[in-house]
Image (cartoon, rainbow, N blue to C red; front, side, top):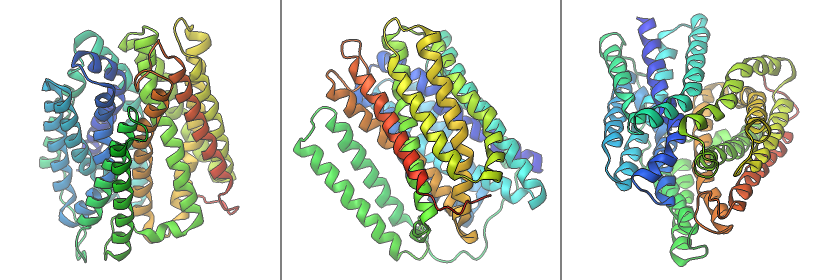
Length: 454
């Protein structure tokens, strides 16, 4: 029974990881084939991240209240049906809409996969089970770019979404036949629907405004959308302060260590999400790489993170989180800056491989200590919420960065994506990523001297 729970959670998580990492490589081809504008190509990623980051917290809370298996299966159904819609889409608008629905499904599916493991395994076996889940997820993340490149190049980009269907069949069969239902009994209060609606609308308006600014910086429409988004963000804070069971307990941020780690998360993952969105466009559209070659190019970064993170996680237990977090962000900043050397005729060994290796090492140094700092900074009663909120913050960082990097590229001339006619746009975007990573390193320096060990 427990093995079935673990397998269902692994396969479900693999669906989201493969989908996200494979799509990064396939997106340049999708943009050309549909066709899609620069803004629409960004919204293919942003629409998914918007609903995932805004709803992932209430997705976990609803599972605790109404049944974890029920929400897990519902999320899988939504994710799968929207994946089919993505595969069958005939225009960019339909693809963006399907991706938004896919984000809703992922917001239910992802938190419940880990919750089911937590419930199924006792304290002694739980760590090993979560370790297996994490290792399998890392393998799937590494396989995603290669799988996406192969499917896009040899079959069709539509199979990047279609591959989710057989995986979903396995998940749903296990969920209905072998996974027991569980819920938290006696949950008081009502689900924080109002708070979730406020943050979803706020993020949506802010991203819409930033995307609009890529073409009309300072335009009245863009500024109005941005102002409305910020007002709704303030409303979200007000609602959370008054809610009996808030989706984001604001008291967590009163802890200096947690608020600092959250800022670090936002900055580092903004740099990462922004850079990895635009690098495949530079590789394929400017340097002439095939989708499969682009997938291979990103592989060293993911493999280094997967292989080296356990070592730095163990090191954190001896020296604490502060120094590795600072060093990791600084090394990652160098990696982002090295990506600026990409361009027409740039040799792989001298220009393409070094940034992927340096970035991978920087992330490997930083990720496990960051998790330790987040979990150690939270009160024992808030560790679940602290982990979920930090996860959401990382996705919001990705979401905002794609739009801001688009503005940076557009200000260099041309559109909001890299072009051979305006190579400085990509260079500026990579240096922007490097600056964000350096700010993350500075934030790490302000962590309390008392080190947090998981």
